Length: 445
Image (cartoon, rainbow, N blue to C red; front, side):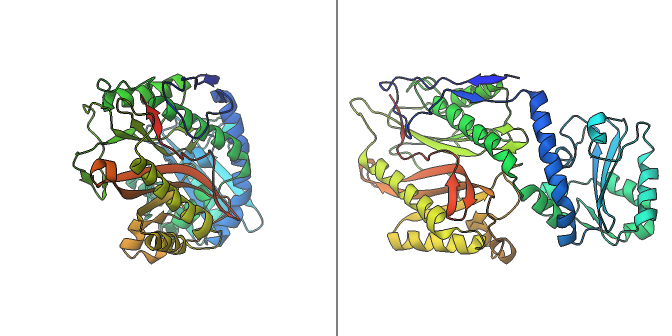
């Protein structure tokens, strides 16, 4: 893994013009893996310190997470040290004893990093024996498990693991098994200040790689394919020593091209699509680093011969999307408001302005499609009062993901999508981007 990533953003202005201004530094410092683990273990202690109050808010007296060899529970790296686990079945138990949070690990092999956070004897007892003893000692009223949730992170306990817990703890304990979904959601949706500088670096790196991809370093009009750009993004991730949580996507719009839809959105372009002069190119890209995910969408225009900038109609379309961002971020959203209230306020402003808009913003943090309030047309459209009623929390991270459709005169009135996505943090004054937003199209010559 690279210790320090050096990303050159030194393309001459004759090659491409970048907005916002290039990064102040070309160095994006990333930690080596050993230091990442040390830092994340510091975060883990902070998370554990807040867990007892969360368990009590959600009526959970005991919370159990089971990790299976070669079938890791996605919760494990956030409730225990973020290291590899190779025991056949490792169990992590949190118990509200009435006066403190008791933490017990029943693992196949002793590991010092686990013992720093859990009761974990150097000669581990069988997990079934540990669970039976904990049940008999504490007899919790509600035993929270990763079952019955609406999202993968909240329903990650497998059938065989559930059966193991039931058989180990007995029928009386089994009758007290409940879904830990509300607890898991709050635990993973809660951001801590110590994460912020690392997340900002992650977003900065995401921006830097995306800018390179949407430039003449990577794209030669008439030659480069969508697949070529996608492969560059994969190789840039490898070069940086980071991962991604989804396949990078590109969309291509051009004058006279019929828009192809996919589940209400502009469809992803096939890899064999050749990027031509006059095209509008869109990238959807994200990075995983230190147990955190980014999500990022930006757009570039490929100049026609003789052009020095994008047509005025395309620039106006960008302004419409910026107006939508401003409505959602600066005026509609505040801590304490619900996701539905923020959505309705922003869309009402767009309707008044005559802008055709779509908002599908989702939480970020430990997952790219994270847990917590989403400001999303889909929950409103299906009448999901529970999702629309979730309250926005100061300090939360979100993907400001949205688009507008604008008829472009230079394209014979053809409607153009301007899709943007930027990670942001909720402050008392609304959402704040981690990096300056894109205010003009990147230009490819």
